Length: 342
Image (cartoon, rainbow, N blue to C red):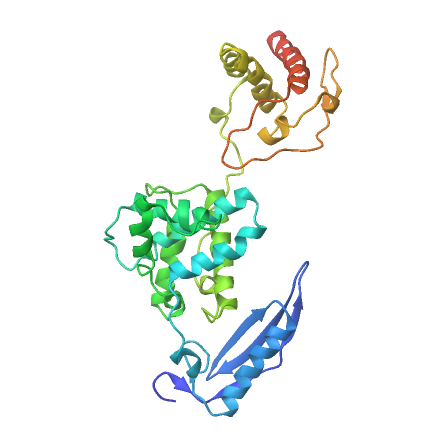
């Protein structure tokens, strides 16, 4: 054993793991005293990878103790930068992701890239770097733009060489430190304060999926995040009553909205249904008169929700005129009951 390499290699048979929806195939091998494994989406890829390991071992090639792979696999392999990996990952996910999910991916990758820069004192401001990533690298470029806008071109060119190699995440000791920096960054807002638990966990899921993509692309020997102890932020189980609008505040809010002219009158049932029926905006905008199953003079009525119209990055429009009319009647009765205390 010399220079961090060994010839003591043993390759085991592949095995399959059947999950609830996905079956994965695992290749296991031992380099020195350490066990290594890699998962694949289908058996053919697993068999091909295992055959490559066996071929290298039979030829007497040295294996790296730090990566578990034949040293020859790394000698001619160009270093893949973090920026290049995120571009490939975003492009792979784009066709199959819903608009809101695309936005979540862009936000998570933008935050994570801040922790993967080669310098702590970049020549551009954080705002300029984030704008180049969020609005072009992870958005307009995927929509078909071939060149960044003039005001972002210099930042984009700098980013091409300004992030560390992906392989740095898999190095002993320094890789774990870098991974903790990534997890810490996605757990905080831009001002440094802790982000909401749901936000941090959502970005953590994107980051974990990115690492799995890097493993499949042979950019990393294994997912480095799994080797880092990270305390997952907890989602609050209770709601602070002080943050919830009460019935008197709701009536005053709706009255103020109604005073905003014709559009305000149409928005009254929109906000009223959000409050009294606890609907989401995308559910309210798709309501029709047929959705109103019952509306008694007293007591609870019934709305049947059959569809929704989610939209990303834009405020939902007011309900259609027929839905607005039905909702206005329901809202009026609910407000009457609220005033009478029933």
